[in-house]
Image 1 (cartoon, one colour):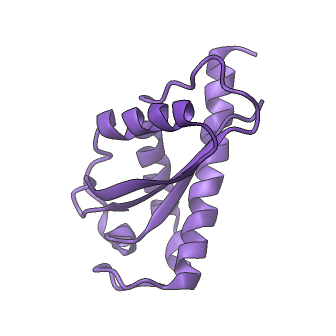
Image 2 (cartoon, helix red, strand yellow; image 1 turned 60 degrees about the horizontal axis):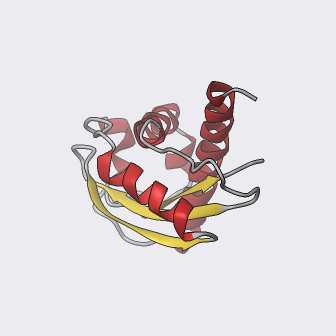
Length: 136
């Protein structure tokens, strides 16, 4: 499988995880400046598109170590500011320190996804988790 196809597969997996984790975070209903804690926020096309764009910024910087075994994963929890910058982020769990280091570098060097659009303001300050996985 080529690197481009592999990268696309990883992006699809990660976006699904972002949305699923964000929905789980909604169930936990942490207060945040955007004010909206209902799952309806995550169903908006503009929210999905913004999260996809954010994910692309991180994925462009992520380099999966060549010798990463199948089923290796890292979970990162992050919060975004209204301007699209990271308010905070931390590694929540990992199966291998080497893959965790690669994800950490991707977050450190990712470009901003740009300002969060008004219809997606419910994302501001919301705890969102993203899963980075080796699907092979």
